[in-house]
Image (cartoon, rainbow, N blue to C red; front, side, top):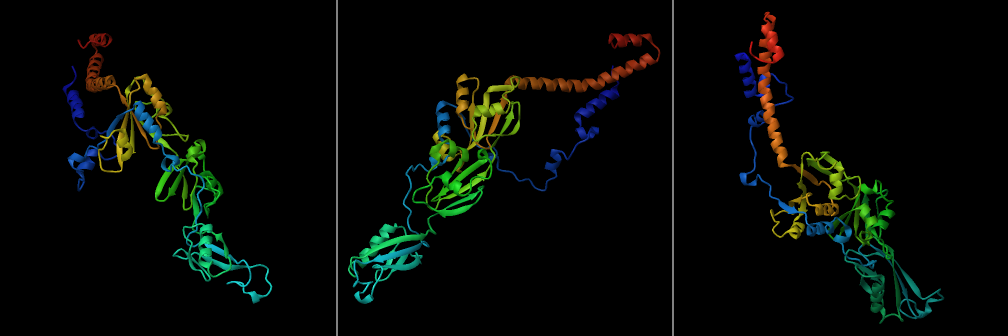
Length: 413
């Protein structure tokens, strides 16, 4: 039988904190941090559980997700070609006036020989009210109009004063209808919008092209207060996203390597890079090494993502759990169903997605039994040590029965 002192020490070490038994630690214990705080700031009890929507991956959900990709074409569906470039405030305008013959308003008969009946008015800027000035015609509205429309207005203002007047209006320098390209490009620039029309890739090319790898580059387009973002590779490989740029557009190119996080019963846990511009859920699970067949429950694969409130409403009108712009959504993926594997190959991953694979119920029971066995072994080790020491002492004292005890493993002397 074990010595009572040994049993008391073993029981004491089990009941006391580990530090009380002299075991080293690498910092203060959690309860010490909590108890020594001067103040505890916590949310009300009702707010401790973050509300979320649980959505099962079905063919309908898969179709909605495939259509709700970050793309330029989805945000700017206008497929019209080049638009007319109109005059704006600050543009430099040149006006040339013609009369049919001498003796008119601008070319008197006694004026002598001339090379032609035309007059070039000095270049002028469109003023802050959007006007230019033409002699004898006064203020002519130019802002928001085409050169032809300005010409017609000048002729209409002069027709009762000049001899069959004609006018030619030329935009010498555009300072209003510009396109800006900034960010991770070789030469950030602002340039005039072309009447022939340019697409997004043309504008990026005029700025010298990308600095970094295409699969890590994103393109943000701002137009009229609306903003759209798309992977650069999507603009190349999906031509519908290579839309026409317009005057006053701003293109910003930036680099953002895409990653996702995998937790739970997968081979590789942690942050994992895409290493490509697009990835499906099935590919992401494969990149994480797949499910652990001795732990994972294939029916409990979950993908955590923040969706916009409008898209969450498309998933289900009941998916309204907060008044914010984004809704926490958890997609439930049942990989026990063979058909779900096809849906998983179509479900697109997003940057910063989180995949969690739950353990099976059987694993939780096994872990509990292992815990019980560990506790039992912890209790038995000092007892067995005491028994062995007591038996060894008997052997040293010269009894042959002690040797018999050791060989047989019995505690009987």
